[in-house]
Image 1 (cartoon, rainbow, N blue to C red):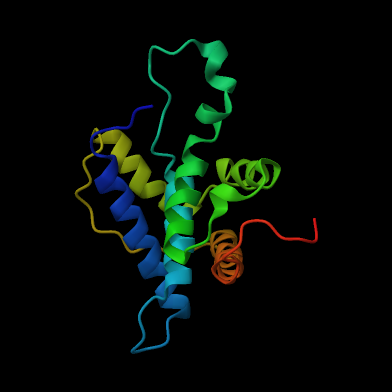
Image 2: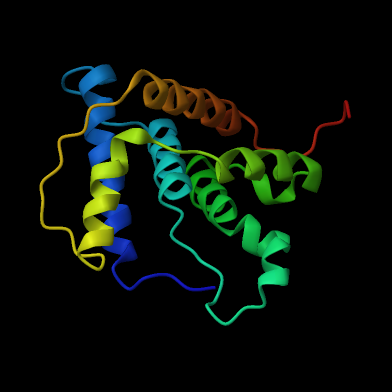
Length: 162
């Protein structure tokens, strides 16, 4: 797997820009972002940016392998579930695959200007971003906040009622 050398800076810009835009809508003055929202915004940033790519020399027929198809979703969940201390990696694979498939398709329109600048300048970002979340972006992030709120309460990966 590979990623562009500027990807950490791109991810940081996207994460902090999303956080600022979300705080504008939901943060109570004097309070910080709690770990549930940190996990949701981390997941959103990684899933939307998709920082990991298969190696350039890979056989195109092997791009269907799950470790390539779901690499970014796996990174998003590993990073985010670590924040809320949920053992997502121990859940049944069918559960994980549904989440991975959803995150693989996650897109946030509000980050397009950041990604366009990164693409035009070989990953170097020089602008300051003041994003506004579209209704769809806001709904996606709110859904992730709810999801990670539940994960934060579930410290066991498997439940006995399955």
